[in-house]
Image (cartoon, rainbow, N blue to C red; front, top):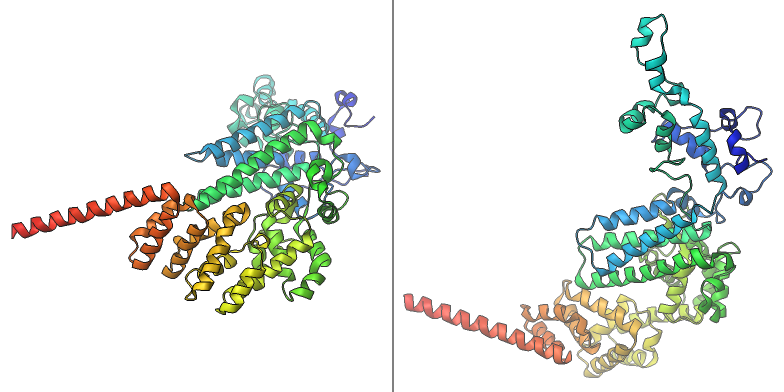
Length: 552
C-alpha cells in the first residue's frame, strides 16, 4: 500500500519519512539562508507538490499546475489562502469602509468559508503526507524537556544542572518554539506542529484552501489580487470621479467572486469548456474560438497575456497593416491592456517580458472572466472588426486635431460614435472642436457628442475624461471639457462644474454657468444657490466698505 494511504498511517515510523539512500526519490535539500526555520523548510519540501511518486505523472500526484506559464510560478508564491488573507487584512486596515467595500469583505469571507467546508471531504496527496510528517514528528517525544528535569538521576551532578541537550535537527528552532509557545514545552511535537503549520493544530491546517481545481484557484487569486490593487488606488486619495469608477469596478469584482464561489461549490465537476463556464460566450462563436485558441486545451479559466498578444497579432496583424499601417501592435496592446485594466501595455506596445521580476500574477495572466467582461463592455461581436475600428479611431483623432475644417466635418460624418473606444486623446480632440472658430465645426462636434449621451459605454468614458480635465491645468481645455459635459447632460459632474464658476477666467465662468443650466432642475437650483451666495458676498463687501468709510 501507498505510504500516504489512510490505512498505512498508523504504521509510520521516522525512517518512513526521512529518505533512505537506496530510494529513487531525490534527497530533500534545505537552504540555510532561506527565511524561516529548517523544520518549516523540511515539512514544506516534503508536503510540496514537487514530490511526485516515481512512475506516476504529475497529474496522478495531484501536485503540479496544469498551466506552466509565468503566472504559474507567481501563483506558487501566492496561494489562494494567502490572497484571501491579504485582501481581508487590507480591508480591515481601512478606517472607513463604504458599502461597496463592506460587500466585498462579506463575499471574500463567504468564499473562504465555502472553501474551508471542502477540506474534510477533500484529501490530497500533500495533506496525507502532512499527516505522515506529523506522526513522524510525534516520534520525537523523547525530546520532552520535563523528562530530562525529573527523571535524569545520573552520577554526574553537572549533567543534572546543565540544560538538556537538544537534537541537532531541531537545534536552530527549539529556543524560538519555547519562547513563542511556552505552554508547549512539555510536548515538542505540538510546538513543531504550530511552527510548521501541519497537523491538527489551531494555528495551521494540514491542507491548503482550494476549489479542487488548480486552474480555477489561479483565476480566483488573480481577481483577489486585482481587488487589492483597486483598494490601494482608493487609499491614495483619488478624485471624486475616479473614486466612483474604482468603486464600480470593486462592485463588479464582488459579483464575480460570488459567481466563482458558486462554480467552486455547485458546478465544478460539470465544467469541461469555457462554454460551460460562460454559456453566453458560446453565443459568439468567433470569440469563443478565439478564447479556445489563446488558452489551449488546459486553459479553462485562464491563459497568459503573452499568448493572447502573440495569437491576436498572428491572426489580425495582416488585416490591420493593410488598412492602417503601423497600428497593429498599438491597438492589440490596447485591447489586451484594457482586459486586465493595465494602461501601460498600450504605451509599451507589448506585454511584460517573460521572467520580469516585477511582474505579478494579475499582470501575467488573463482570465476567461476578464476576457468576457471586455467583450460585453465593448459589445464586440468579431475581434477583427473591433480592432479595425480601433485603428480607424487613431486616424480619426489625428484628423480632428489637424485644424482642417473640411476634413473634420467629413470625419464626424463618416465615423460612427458607436465604433469608438473612445480613447482620451479622441475625447479631448472632440471637445476642442466645441471651441473652434468655425461655427459649423463646433455645431457638428456638439451634435456628435450629444448623440453619445444615450451610449452608455461612450458616455461613461467621456464623463470620466472630461470631469478629470476640469481638475487639470489649462483654461482652454477646461472650457472645452465644460462644454462637452453639457452636451452629455452629465449631471453627475455638477460639483466639478460648480467649482469652475468661481474661476478667475471670465469666459470659463460663463461656460460653466451655461453648462449648469443644461443640467435641468438640478442645474438651475445649483445656479440659483450660486447666485445667492455671490449676492451675499457682494452685500457683505459693501457693508464692510461703508463701515470703513464711516470710520474715517
